[in-house]
Length: 275
Image 1: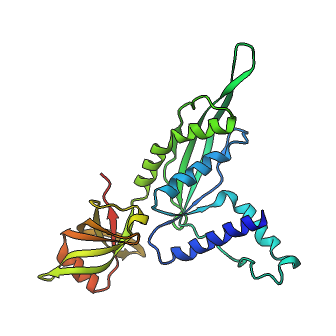
Image 2: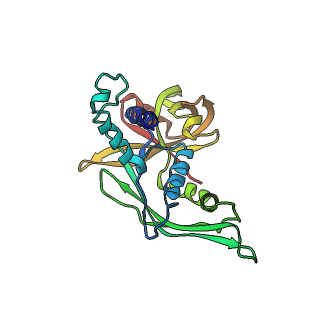
Image 3: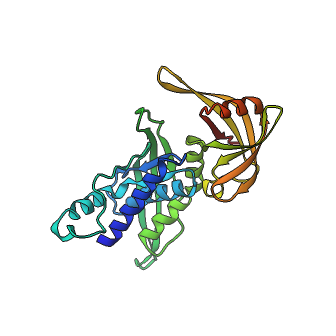
């Protein structure tokens, strides 16, 4: 168990370090509060972590097990670890930019019985709400409600809950895609003509969730009263995936301004257009 937790902590630490140079937002998932006393409630937050991770838009920090992580860090301060090279640095901060908080409203798990009273299997349905907190600004999105379908008949309560949660995956995915527009940056001007950018290279490829044909708006960012104020200056379209880390794009609008601002080392962001 200690080795398992140490491995988890190391992975989280490496992700946090990576996030300093990566343009993906760091998203934490907190343990869900609940109105029901069910030992299967943890499966809801686990499903949210899975869905958020599978979108490939975020670096995900699972805060639902953070207490266990802190216990492991404290344990490693004991004499048994004084000479160990495998201890984890003690002041690691899970620096999430956004926190996903949820509340379980209903979790129904019921046994289906045969005419003779024996249990034939189990069914389940779950209802919960989700909010997203911006850690820096303190702003919170409106709570979004989710209701699963009733699961098919399953052999165990756990499998019934998991099957019910599978039915909500498309709605969860859609919610996070709309709540967190995929953003990146221009890394290089590949070609230009008449003082206008023609093709550009952006950070993020297959592992980022991009695909050929995706269109993005290009924005400049000004600071007004100490706060970022984005405004659109152009549009680009992905025409070739350059591996997992980069994509090549043609400039469909705003080539001159994109080139001049890029050469001036201004911060330009690219945001995926959701259709």
